[in-house]
Image 1 (cartoon, rainbow, N blue to C red):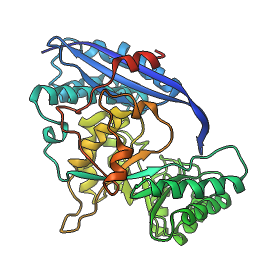
Image 2: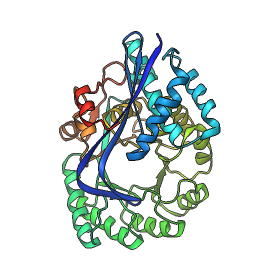
Image 3: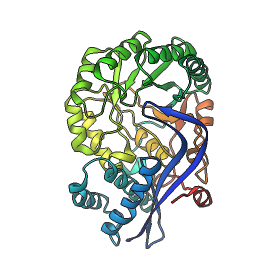
Length: 388
C-alpha cells in the first residue's frame, strides 16, 4: 500500500452571530480537513488546528511541503513518516504551523491504519479504559457589549448549558480583572452552587492580574483557571499554581514532546490540555500523554474543530489510562463547544449526535465503534463549504 495523494479541504461559513474570546472577535467558522488517499482505495481523514488564514497557510504546508516528502511511502509507517517530516522541517519551525499541518496528516494515517487492521482507533492504541465519556459544554463567549448585559447573558447561557445535560461548563474571560470577576459571579448564579464551572482566559493576563482573577475564581469554587497567562511563561504558571487554590490548566498552545517536557518540568499545570490537531497528531499526542502521566499531571484534552477532531478525541479519551487509578478514579471529560458549528454537527454521513447523547445519558457519550476514527465525512457537504 502506498500514499498516492494528500488533499487539504478548508471549509468556512458565516456564523449567525459575532463571538469572541480575549484575543479577538470573529464571525466565520473555519475547519481544515486532511484527506490521505492510497493505491488500495483506503482513505484516511485528519484535521489541522487553526482558523481562517492560518488554515490557508497550513493547506500550503500540507500539500506543497509535506505531501512531496511522503508520497509513495506506506501509510502504515506512521512513526517513520512523522520523524522524516519533522526532521526535515526542524530548521523551519519546531512549533506552530508546521506541527499543525503535520498533525492533520498523522491523524489521517492513523485512520488508515485502523481501517487496514479492521479495528477502531481506541483498540489500535491499546483498548478502552471507559465505555462512556463525560462531556462539558463551553459557551459564554465574549461579545462587544457592556459588562452588565454580558453578565445577564452569561447567567442565562450557563443555566441553559446545565439544562442541556452537560456535566460541567466553561466560560470565556479576558475583558479585565474586575469585569471577569463579575462575569464569573454571573455564571455561578446561573448554574447554582453544586455545578462545576471553569474559566478560560486565552492567555490574556500578566501574572499579577491573573492572581486577582484567580482569587475571585477561588471564592466561587471554580474548577480550573485556563491559560491565565502567556504560554511561554513557564515560571509564571508555576507561581500561579503555587499561589492559588484553583486548578491551573493549559497546554493547548504547546507543541511536541520537547515543548511539553519543559512545560511539565516547570510544575506549572494542575491539568494538562494537549491539542492533538496541533501538537503533532496522534503519534506525538501519545508521547505527550506518557510525559504527562510521568509527571503525575492529569489530562483533559483541548478540543476545537469539526466532527473529525471530536471523534479523534473521543477515541483518545476512551483509551486514556486513569491517573492515579483506584475504585473511583479521576475521569477526563470531552470538551464540547455549544455555539453554532455546522462542521461538527452536519459534516458526517452519520452524525455523532453529541447533544442528544448528553441529554439522554446523564452527560455522557459513547465512543465510535467503526474502524479507524469510525466516521466518514459527507463529500457533498465538503464541496458546498470548501473555500480552498
